[in-house]
Image (cartoon, rainbow, N blue to C red):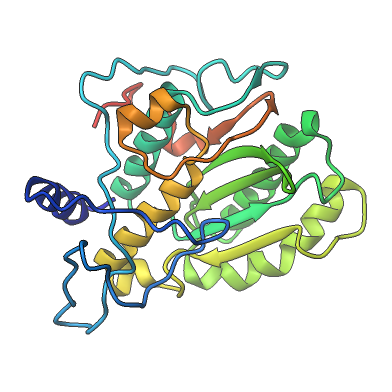
Length: 274
């Protein structure tokens, strides 16, 4: 998140205009057009003529939050552990990772959703499958001289089954290459033919290069994407971080969330604080 975005959200909250997150999008899809809500107070960008996608709230560290994390992927992310929601520690970890991605010049630009159950992966196999997918994505970009940052969260819901939401920094010049490889990766991971609607991949904000062409608008849309990914937070985590969009995260076996090493706790010096 950019400093400008954080300051704008704080300013609006101080003036009594509580900014609301979009509640209609599916799988984190957000938009870069459309009129603002009456109570949002968005203004048109004088240089581009575009409106921020929607209102947004500040996703930061909760006051007096003692959350800490020393290992990759979230507290108690053991292979056999069952969980039903993101903890406050995990939410804090993911937000800190997202901030660090922006700080090192690799803001998340793409949202990818993989429906592992539809692909034939059992619930206990999701963590391994997601790990293989991110490994293939990372190695592909590395071969072409491009770094990558990513975070992911697993969910399991009624009529959805086990699935993964992945936010990643993918430079515009590499999007076509990755998009052409993803179905093949899924066939390798699952050992089965690709099934329609298993993977959804779209740029955050609706168009490639938005992070460079209109950083403020990209920051707004990234706030929304993050809020969507974190919607399976526990009530305690939601209260601490002001998360307004909540849905049951469902039963997950093993890792519920994870990040690339370059934005994990070790890369940040073991710090989660803002």
